[in-house]
Length: 377
Image (tube, rainbow, N blue to C red; front, side, top):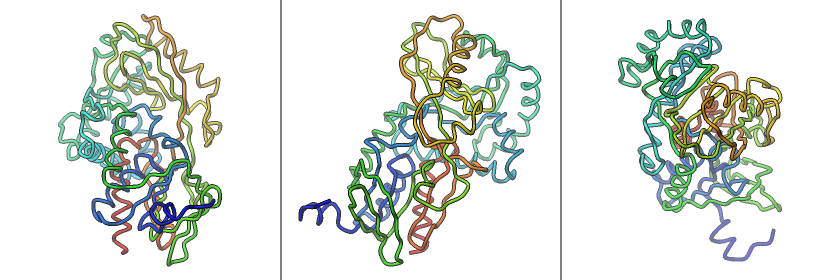
């Protein structure tokens, strides 16, 4: 790629920090670093015209975890890790809200609601409410983060679901509005964001880091943060982070829609909410874990059929509706939901594996990556 003098000297001259990935983590890392070092040159490289993974494709759940999800996590991860991750989610949401402001991402504190179609499953999880509330009191400041809500399903005009546990600490956001304003914050600070930059190679010589992008464009930087989440293995030799595709649909506006709040079902594998008098509904990855372990965007007939079935029989049985859009996003998951923030080499840090909770934890993970980077300087 041939550069002009101006391009070489003002755009693609050596950077102090290059961040790969312009999603929630990458933008927050850039903002955090620039606030610490206003005169440093910070560049973000993004492969797509918008953040490629899930930052502009997620359902906008400002959530910290349902009872059944946390119960499931406790069977797979150390107890301390589970509660540390919940604390990270809660504090991460506070951080995100402080950076952008509630009105600039349409944050609504409407609560989270886990719904059950099985009495046995509900009772098994309801037994854990008191224990979990005690664990979360120091995090949320609420004596009852979780409580049984006997009338939410009826008020929402749903059928099929029979029981409900409320989480008072949860809310929802407008994902697109949040990302637009996060981009605005970064650009006002003088952070350069280059889109359509497909990074193919990163080399750390212990003096400069050399990054090769599309058309053999070579960029140099003092430090690099890789914030590509589910795409991390394409650039780094890193274990225990795998791509996970999430499929989502949204209806056309429904007059008189009664659903209000963020709903979770089946250990959080399904989730739905009201946005602009539409139902946004996603999930079903547990129907085909291996098939959804991919970096390829797209839809599967099996999962979409199940979403359609649950939507018509359980969520909107009394409403006529039409599907407006269907799409997918790529998350990063692993054996634990705790994110990976660590040095890959002397001057390269990764900040990946958001575990499907990027909205909640992305702000703090980006800040953690910067703090780790600075601690070694």
